[in-house]
Amino acid sequence: MAMPRALAPLRHPAYRVLAAVLVLALLTQGLWAIAMVWQVVALGGDPGSLSLVAGLNAGGMLGTTLVGGALADRVPQRLLLLTVSLLQGCAVSVAAVLSLTGVLEVGHLAVVALVDGVALGLFYPAYSALVPALVPEGDLLAVNGLEGAVRPVLGQAAGPALAGLLVAAYSPGAALAVTAAVAFLAAGCALALPATPVRRKAAVDGAEPGLLADVREGFRYMLATRWLLTTLLFAAAMTLVFMGPLEVLVPFAIADAGGGPSQHAWVLAAFGIGGALGSLLVASLRLPRRYLTVMNLLWGVGCLPMVAFGLTTDLGILLAATAVVGGTLQAGMVIWGTLLQRRVPPALLGRVSSLDFFVSLSLMPLSMALAGPLSQLVGLTGAFLVAGLAPLLFAVVAIAAGRLPADELAHPLDVPAAVPVEETPAPPAAWMGADGAGNVPAREGEPWPS
Image (cartoon, rainbow, N blue to C red; front, side, top):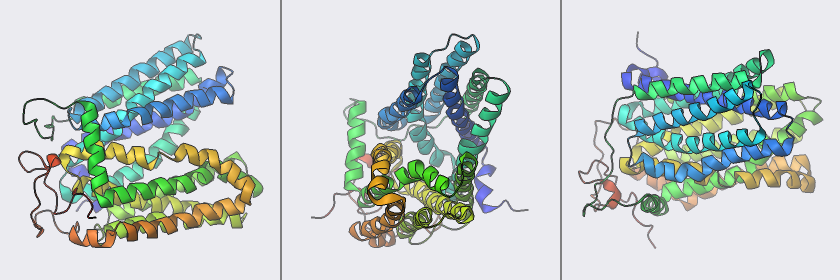
């Protein structure tokens, strides 16, 4: 029997190993998220202590993601994935030992959280840059669909659930020990990955540019590539108006509907299940001809159901609305991941992946901070109307201002990988590679016309 399209990448042995690394990495983070929270509680920490630990974790991740992107383009990605897993395993092992021996303090846990965040900042760019080196171009959409399906299942459901059971049955220290063990398993899988060459241009004069020069080159490419910059700015604006209400205000809407923590958990589960189903659906289809337009509209239209949280208290409707939001947002992410892997030159993919993460999430802390004051100013209904309606407006503006319909017609991705696309030759650019392997379509990466 033929393998389902969404599972087709698993026929490649190298990708099966990489998929195992991803699965174990996601499980590690799901375990850590809950074990860390309940370890702070067990130590008698207050919300301020938890904010310190969680803030250092997020800060370490954001602080190293740009450097992580530069490293992913100059260091073998297999080595980076191995380093990330070993860092996490060693750091969390220290926390587990200190916890089980009764000498762990919040300060110790904060340092471990910082190291874990630093490691995460290195993981995503390296993983994203390695995928197209191991998987044929025609299977990239399915790869991103699989990732979009397993991410919420493991990171938001299985990992946290397992950690909760371990904390309840034994202790937070036991949950931390299992977290470390899973990280070491990920390191073992990373060690089994095949070696792949670094796909970047060798220095002409023999002088290797520094990391900061590499980061600047990534920024220059982003600023010169209209579809990339437009989409990232749209994602940042959507994050500003959407993520705060989703994370901060949804629990209050559920409380107004007569629900509590259990109902909140159902809503989060619906979001994750919807995301998994949306990912698998898109992975089972061909990449749409109008991929940029479809992707941005999926994100914009997908936020519309958020208005339900401001208009009804029916829990069934809220669950359905959250599932639709999760499904459409994750469906767009599958297209986005495939787009980056197919249109960004291989020598720049690590840096562009890190910029994707950094820019699109740059306004999330501000969104969280503004959600409460916004709800006090316009009420929950007004805040959820903004969260649901504004992204669609942003999407329409991005499509028009970025000239995305013309761009996607000029650079079709719905053709078989073996069929060359007629393109106007473009002059060589620094990011195209010495052998032309990183060549990009005409006008790709060129400065915007005045």
